[in-house]
Image 1 (cartoon, rainbow, N blue to C red):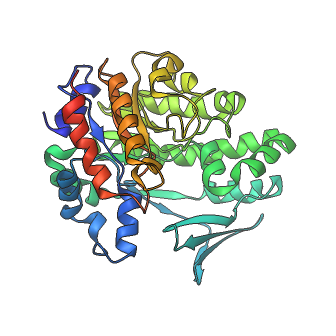
Image 2 (image 1 turned 45 degrees about the vertical axis):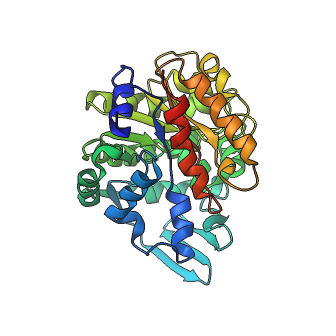
Length: 365
C-alpha cells in the first residue's frame, strides 16, 4: 500500500498492511533553505512532495491556514534586525509584541508578549471584535493535486482561544494571572475571540483539506485539567463534531507531556491526537499510550522524538527505539509512526531514510 492508502485506511477504521509512517519535515526543510542547501521556494514547490517520496516519508503537515487574517484596528509591523515588532492601536490602549529570530536554531520566539496582564484584556477584545477573515484556498488546491499517493492534505483551524493566548499572545504566566485577577473579563475576552475564530474555523472546514488540525501545542505540565475543561474542551468538541459532519478527519496537536491530559483529550471526539512525544523525551512510553488514552477509537500519532534524528542520540538507541515503537504499533491499527514533534535542523538524512526500512521490515500487522 502507499502512504496515502495506509493512513486513509486507518482513518476509515480498517487495517492497512503496515504501520503508516508520516513525518513533519517543515522545520528541517526551513534549516536546509537557510543554509542554502535547498532553494527558497522549496517548501511550496512540487519538489517538496517528491522529497518526501524519495525519503520514504508520508506527507501531511505544511503549517497552512486556509484563510487570511485582516486586522481592522490599525496593525503596524516592522523589523529591527532579527526582531519582528508589532503594534495594535486601540481606544483601550496599544498592544505590542516582539518576536526574535535565532539563526542558530532557524526559529523565532517571543521576547515580548501582546497580553501582559489583565489590563490588556479590553484592548484585546477591541482587536478581536474587529478582526476579519477571508478564504485563501489557492495553495491548498494546488497542493492537493501534487500530493498524489504520498499523503493527505491537512490544513489548520485556529487554536482554541485559550491556547492561542497561552502559546502565542500571552504565555501561561500572564494568562494564569489575568484569569485569576479578572475571571469575568477574561471569560468575556475568550468569548469575543471565539466568535472571531469560529468564522476562520468555518472557512478551514470549507477548504479542500481532507484533514483538519487544531494546532493546540498542548502540554500537560502547562495546561492542567481545570484550564482544559473550562476553556479548551468546549471549543475542541464543537469543532470535532463540525469537522466530522463535513466528512473530514479531525486532528489535535499535543506535543508536550501527556500524563494528566491524554485521556481527557481522547474523550473530546477528536479523531487523531498527533505529535505524541514518548518517553524518554516525554513522560509516557509508547507501550502505555493506549491505556493512558483510554478511548480505543482515538488514533495515536507520533512516537519518535525529534532528537532521535540527530547525532545527540546513538545509532543503537535510535534503532532500539524505532523497533520497540513498531512492536507496539503493529499490534493494532490505531497508530501512526510519526515525528514528535519535528525533525530538527541538525537531523540526519540517513536516519529519516532508515525509518522507512524499519517499517518495511518490522511494521506489518
